[in-house]
Length: 188
Length: 162
Image (cartoon, rainbow over all chains, first blue to last red; front, side, top):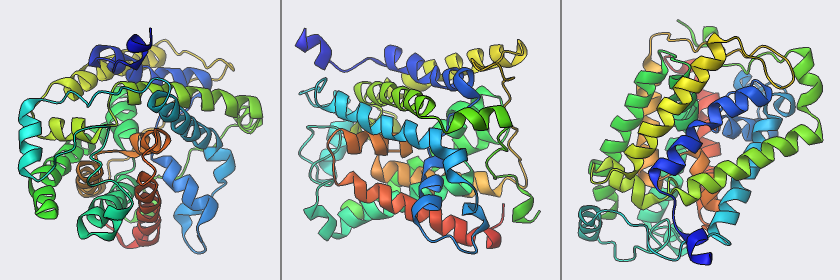
């Protein structure tokens, strides 16, 4: 039983469930699935926003439900990362393992490479670049693009919104440049 | 087109929704939906930095399988809801506000910058939260940094082309 619960879920189980988030939130309360809005709500809630029209709105009323959802995601990660935890390394392809080894990674346990994502790595240039730089780009890019993977690639595409197609394409262009150009530079 | 014309403002909340939006019961409901989603993306390994690398290197099918099943499910169900003029459980009409194309610069430039960050952190916003919950404490730094990135956009917004 425990072995069954700890097993990772295949794409054909996880994928449809992810897709169902869009209609579920619409039916529950006409809510648009889009997680990055929470970054904006969080800014509106805790950061100085004087003179910044982008953050001057009632974040409790507009974003309360979404912040609750984000807290839930943290709880879901906790549940799946403890009680349902998969003790095995993520079964990525041998080709990816070989590529990452060439970039100097050795530890393939867990969901993120422990060599890069730990507190002491923050003192190194590469840790800073990945966590602080990468995080900043995610937050700036998603706000500029008006949505992230959930808001554009899922909700926007599901609603056949024209802007979401180029946005999704741009996400991939950026991801490919980040993987093939930036990452080797950072890890060199 | 100047920036303020682009509707990025959160949609105006009708009175009926406003009444329910703040209630603890409804917040608890969305929290529960979040828990379910957090479990799905963690067990489905969407939040794995390694899986994102595999995807951007075109070396595995897993993430593409996720997109290729999630998208049709989302498209079919959403279009069905729209075309049948379905209502929410609370009885309101389901409406999806259109996104403005503008000159499209925001989607190309913002999208690419987002993609760069996605490759480096191995996570988009949902996975950032799930990773933090799953015990990768240091990802909290990326979350705070993402907040600062969003704040920087809010600050630069009047001067950026959209």
